[in-house]
Length: 95
Image 1: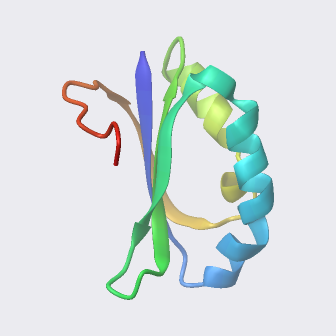
Image 2 (image 1 turned 30 degrees about the vertical axis):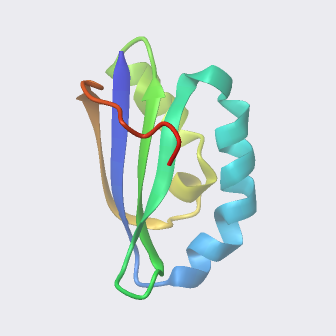
């Protein structure tokens, strides 16, 4: 099953920048479990949050995978939610 993390950053953009290299390594370590990931942007292109989708057996496993992310461990997010998500339409190929 797929699980989405929807997160808003704290008001400290430096936290994201400092943790980003380790965050990207973590995402790479998820292999095929990672379906998609990317930041939310403000009107100037600054990163303000995250949307990530992973495959997990259940909610508990999804929460455990997300808990290992350096963004979670280093307090990048002010708020977040982890919810089951269903991919219904995908027109992203080639974008």
